[in-house]
Length: 126
Image (cartoon, rainbow, N blue to C red; front, top):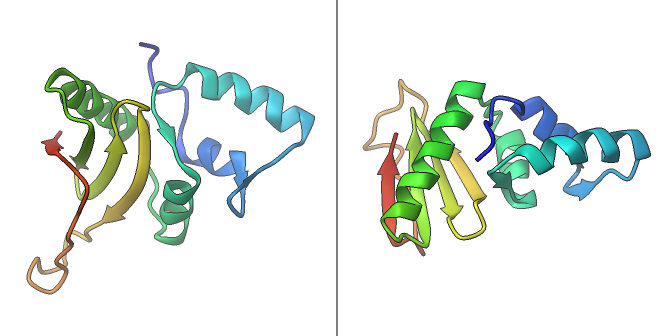
């Protein structure tokens, strides 16, 4: 597996413009190369959620997400909830694709900010 520290959220955000791929040849070529090196992908929906919820991922968080995907894969999980710090990712493990993401602010009360995740068959906390 190639390391994930070559991509960050700003690079992922630049790939999509309002949920559709940019067709600029420069962007397509340079980001296409970056995307080929990434072993985790973000769906259009997940990318929009990250953007609208103002969730910015560090290289270290992306690396931990990748480790969570590998752990889920080893356990035979198909669709997983992966927790990285205070961010919950729903990931299709077979496709290594983040389907959506939700952040729990560190100061929020768990009672007031409950979240329900469906269509998962396992959870990983990294």
